[in-house]
Length: 235
Ligand SMILES: N[C@@H](CCC(=O)N[C@@H](CS)C(=O)NCC(=O)O)C(=O)O
Image (spheres, rainbow, N blue to C red):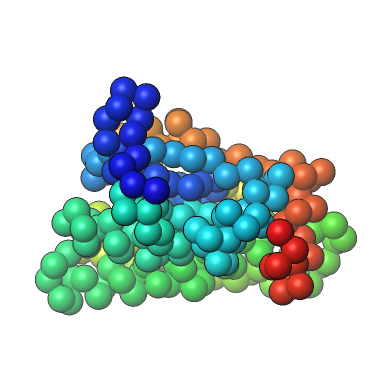
């Protein structure tokens, strides 16, 4: 799939296969911050488009976001996409080794801790077809702990790394719906200041205004449940 063009025939460079949820919003923010040309293609998650053979060819894990390059090659996992774009376009990931790793450790912390725990909190608090108090408590508490970790770190610095970076862009979208995770930002003053500082950035404002994070309606949520290995070759 070479030479992506928009309606005016301009080369748009990248295509982002996305859904308006935190993992895609991270990448949209970075694309906006870098000011590069890209086009958005919304994937119909509720309709199960991610499970199709066509989509599996883009991402064997059948999730968004996926960044498609001009060559047609694709990159999945939002953290890898952020690193790729930051490296390719020389922004928001320091070239200085120590600073680079400070940024990457918070990026990996988001990918391995904040994102999965917040996702499970959303699941057990809002979507689970049955009420599971243990699941609700476990993930609400863990997200609370992780907010505390960020709050402590941000008590003595403005950004997660030395300057505004892909680490901030990775974490911020997960706090947009802190209430879905049973959290109140007002209980974490340094985190709240950081949240407001990121929210004021024009690239972030425009990402959120153009792609407001959407909740999948509970009647459409069924497709996201009970996926097993057996289902992988059903499509
Ligand atoms: N670790 C992955 C997570 C991707 C992910 O879970 N995407 C969700 C939307 S936020 C998805 O595509 N869900 C569809 C499904 O589970 O069928 C990343 O950060 O890219």
